[in-house]
Structure formats: C-alpha cells, structure tokens
Image (cartoon, rainbow, N blue to C red; front, side, top):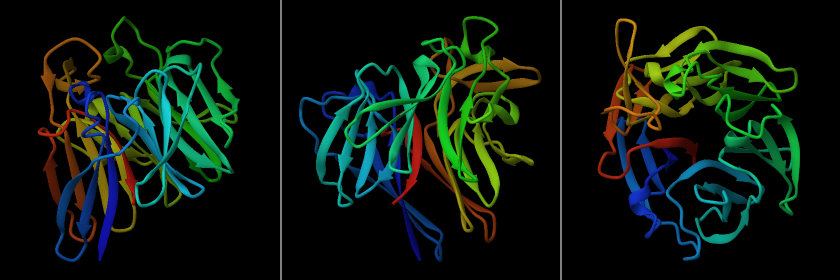
Length: 292
C-alpha cells in the first residue's frame, strides 16, 4: 500500500525567479518501507513570484497553497495540480498557516497576532486577535481538534531574539485555554486519536499532551503528520544556541551559526524503523506536510 503527501518549502529566496522548489511529493510504500521524494513544478502566472509555500489545505474542490510573498496569496489548484485562480490577502501581514473549516479558509496572521477567516469571495472576518497588530507571540499553526479551533504560539520574547521565547503553548481559541505549555517554539499543531500533537521545534522533538513522542530529530522540527501507520516530521536548518546542558537549534531568523539539516523523517509504527531523506539540495526549510 502506497501513501502520498505534499511537502512545502519556505524561505527559499534563491528560487524566487523560477518558482522552483515550492513543493514536492513524498511517496511511502508501507510494505517495503521505501520512501521516495519527487519535485513538483507549479505552473502559476509569471506575475506571482514567491520564495516558498507555507500552509496547504483542501478546500471544496480545490487544493490551496499559501504563497510566501507580499501580499500573502492563496493559490487554488484542481486535484490534478492544474492552476485555477488566486486571491491576494490584502492587509494581512505574515500569514503562515491555513485550514478549511465549515466553508471558510482560516489563516494564522503571524505578524499581526491574529486569526482571520475568508469566504469564497475573499471577504475577511476576524476570528481572534491579541489587539497588537504586530508579532509579539509568533502565532503560527492552527488546527481543528474536537471540532474546535486551536493555535500554537511561541509566547513573548525576553530579549530581542526569538530564541529567548521558550514558553510556547497550544491554546484553544474560543477561551484561550492553554492545552500544552512550556514548548520551545511550537509549530505544526495536529489532532490525532484524541490527542493534540505539535513540533517542539528548538528541542528537535515531536510532542503530544502526554509528553515527548519523538526526540533527537536532525534539525528544527516543523511539518508534521501522524496516523495509524506513520509519523512523518520535517526538519529545517536553524541557528545554533546554547541551552542549559547542550546546544539546540532555534529559529533561523535569529543571528548565529547555522545548524541542522533540511530533511523528511518517516517513522514506521509497525517496527519503529525510521527513514530519512536529506533535502539540502532542494531547500533549507520544510513548513508543512499534507496527505495527497
């Protein structure tokens, strides 16, 4: 039995001119435990140049990609990856993650501490806001768990560097209740089997509400999928920082030496075998993993 996934890459400035290395396809054979990655070239209007794709989702009959550019732009494709149309998200700064829920596309607006939803005419509706209109907590991923909206955030910095934000959390948007706390850079919140999961990025882990689920991954963890057979996690290059007893890999936006590798890590739950694909020839950062 084969499973297929789309992988999105972000902050890949070297490829803006060609729109190459925005996404790739991951194929996994559950019987042989072979994994294969192949490039996908998105055919989009030449006027749309971006340095990556962050969020991805299925919405109605479309596959939707969030193109990393100014303004952030939703790209709509059919399920054969033929371009249909696009929507520019005017007035929203630093949109990171997207999801489809009850007829809307929800957006985490990182640079404005907001969650917004848009309808099929691209009209915007506020869902949640910290009322700052700037990036004070680095709100990033969003997911639906128990039919409610959840989000992850780094929390506030103690100095000018994001590596100092070491008390991140996942919270329920409706009442702001924190469900998992003390995460050093949470990303990729994910709901599976009545549990919330996320990447504990700077600690190079995947965690859930019970604790550490997968550790010692080879970079800054971001991009996550788990199901009955597999755990798939992306890693990215980041900045080396000292933390207590050792060196960790923090957000690439900070200063310092680079560490870690861009990779996809596939763990087969049947026997705990792990396969790793080094993606350094394609990109430096993975953002999301979407079943395809």
